[in-house]
Length: 526
Image (cartoon, rainbow, N blue to C red; front, side, top):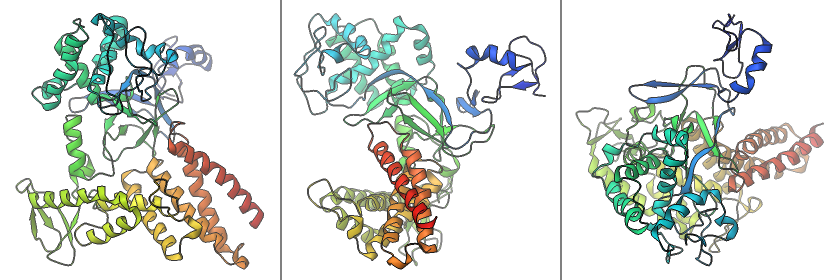
């Protein structure tokens, strides 16, 4: 017995919806009868609330890895605050060769001018009395900072339900007052709307509030040319955790799709990461405090070793390279301490070294492979093996080895041209970063899929190099089966990305390679 009462007739219920585990019925007939209504709310989560998190999502049943938790349509779509001049219909960069015949904003052409997305700023801009004049192209243009706020404000008098959903989102307006971003928005958004566009129907407070809502709740949507910002009524309820148990992607219609990355047990919180999980704790906290206005207190952030990964740790210069960690004591917040010899380093010295070492990263692009290997060698005595600077370089190297460079400066060798040592180097780099991803981006994550694709390419090449007499040996079979398993994951996970993304194309390639590999395995070992 499920308990509760039937959603249709109110009688005692003996079964419940298998998808959400929240709605009860007395019979299959009543469940079928209610489905047209229930399917709009049916989901494997419930919305909860407490004083610390506010509203958050909790699993109403066990959710399997890869299962879609929600697919949410955007309330508002618009360009990022920092952007070049873009078409306000399709968001492609523009040159000014065509402008909207109604308002003057540059567009791709007449078709984009008709886009429903363009209606808010088009109609509001006409209050200016003359057409918009845009003269800066191909570089950051402050005029576009008003677009996404205008699209939010437009809802106030046109769609009360969507406006109400928007107003439920946190803006942290009081915390933003007096900050640099608040002052910039006053000039580039509030004053621009009122003085340049001659729109006076929104108060300063309303404009600043939606600017805060966009910053705090907006999801950046990757695109080929320019990144966009989307506001989503349900997805914004996902809480933050530095070890997310979900992934997020965007489909061709720019709906956000949230999937379980790992098994999420009933009653667990459903979380995403609003920062990069491969950043160190200090950088993640700084990003969250300056953009989302909260600090994270997850288990990873409270652990100086970052769950044993040592992603932020240094190496001690006083002993045999012991790990140097931030002091866990609130009495000594400005000291780092070696876990082996207890030697200390003041925080300002740590920051100065990290700043200097981080600045060297931008120089690696001139001769990427040689410079990256040199960087890893030069930092090996001061940075922990897993430090996020080193891990970032390792990931780049793992993806460069065996691929032709497209920048014209250097042609990397293909896998078949790599020496045995270099091929093993690529494998080692993949495994080292994958071990970190298994902890920090677990389950069916994009990073793990990319690394598995690179790793299987090494195994496939190793199998190809086996002597002919060993092509159908147990070793050959093991290598090919490992490739097959990695390709299955890479193909499945990467094809969840938006069709225009490089990762999606790689997912298609992985699927093709998987079919070819499966045929080869059947041929060799049938």
